[in-house]
Amino acid sequence: MNYFGTYLVLGFQHIMSWQAMDHLLFILTITCVFTWSDVKHLLWLVTAFTIGHTLTLALATLGWISVNPTWIEFLIPCTILLSAIQNLNFKDSKRRNSSKTPYLIVLFFGLIHGLGFSNYLQSLLGKETSLVSPLLAFNMGLEIAQLILVAGVLFFTTIVMSFSRVKRIHYVYVISGIIIGLVLPMVLERIP
Image (cartoon, rainbow, N blue to C red; front, side, top):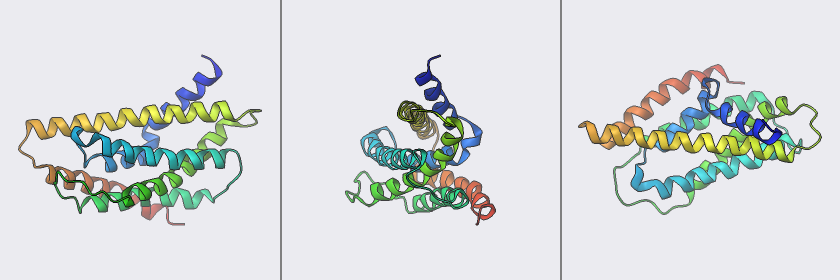
C-alpha cells in the first residue's frame, strides 16, 4: 500500500475501533435525532464538526497549537454528555429551527475532538519530513468512517421506526439516556 493509502486506512481504523468509543458515541448522539428526510440538515452539522476537527487536527499536528492532553481527554466526553442532554429537549417536529447555533456548537465540539485526534496522529508521524500528505490522508480516512457511521445510524433509526411501535421521541430519549449512562463515568474518571 502506498504512503497516502497507509494514512487513509489509519484514519479510517482510528474511528472504526472500540478505542474510539468517545467519537462513536458523539456521532451517535448528533445523528440519533435525524431520519433520512433530515439528511441535508444532518450533513451540514457533520460538515461543521469536520471543519472544527480538521482545523485543530492540522494546527496541533503541525505544532502550531498545544493543549494539555489531560484537559482534552476530559472535554471530549463532556461534549458528548452535553449533546446527549440537549437531545432530551428533542421535539418530534417537521419544522427545523433555522438557528445557526447548533452548527457553531458542533463546530466548537469538533475543535476539541480534533485536538484528541492530533495526539494519536502525532505519535504515528514521528519525524516525517512532510506532514501535508499524511495529514490529508488521515483526515480523509476519518471522514469516510464518520460518514459510514452516520449512514449506519440512519439505517438503524429507519429500521426501528419502521418495524416497531416506538415513537421517534421515545427512541431519541432512550438512545440519549444510554449515551448519558455510558459517558458520565468517562467524564468523572477524566476530571483533571
